Image 1: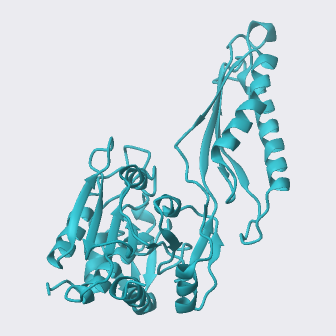
Image 2 (image 1 turned 135 degrees about the vertical axis):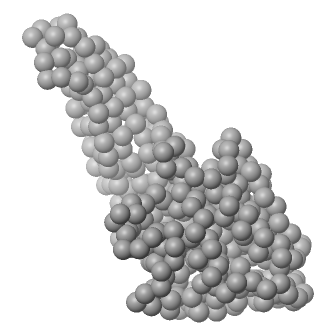
Length: 384
């Protein structure tokens, strides 16, 4: 068996490799160094490793590492990227693991390089064990921005397995449901002119006032129609995030753009919502003599719901928690679309993610490893 660093040393190694993903090129990094490090560890353990470049996204790749062969088996999945950070707001260097107060501080400790290191640690025990079904460790790109890594996996149709755990920070409580996430924009092109004579132009800002009113009406309607008590916020939400338009108080506003997010519940169609919004906003174009364009800022994350299966019941039994719901999005709908029973389950808390002084509590490490060993034994060694 290859000699691997200890779990905290592996976490430290991954944290030291910046892999921020962002829609802003100012912040965006490659994730290849993280992929290469995981590749080295897993190949040394005897895993068959495939590095999959993400089409159209230079410097980004997924890693599919497989121990054993055949149908069925278990995927342990984590994303290799992190969000941007503000180092000046941290008490310590975000790219170095600092251990204090029984916690590991560093960017990505809980979200979610820590889980990837623990998956490798759990896997090393099975290198010389005959497996009835494969164990697959999956490391993905750009989960925090575009989900391009997960989309590339779906397009390639791999990996295949019976079940998948996505190790997002859930306090080791299984999650079988989450809302989707849509980011949309409405752009209005009017006609600038001197404000002393409104007939000289078409005011895009006034048209946007009507757009916002119509969107609020749509929000009220869908919240009345769709409810799911599993969620803390039981309704779909719509948030107006930012608005930009015009350039001077005494000039008719010639252009205006609103960006908003919409979080649909399981069972709601993202395409259906986009069509509804476009149809309802179209009359505003004629009424204000403007050009109105609705577009998606990224393809979106579908809402996710995993029905209760033997896999779900097994994980509920092992953790002592009934599978629940969260509001944040994950790669779960993409893995599920490839035919895997999928749960979101990992160490740490989402409350620490995306925050200065992100940390993973040390008391989460041993329970995570125990849980992974139980799942690997059941779904890979025994091939249940």
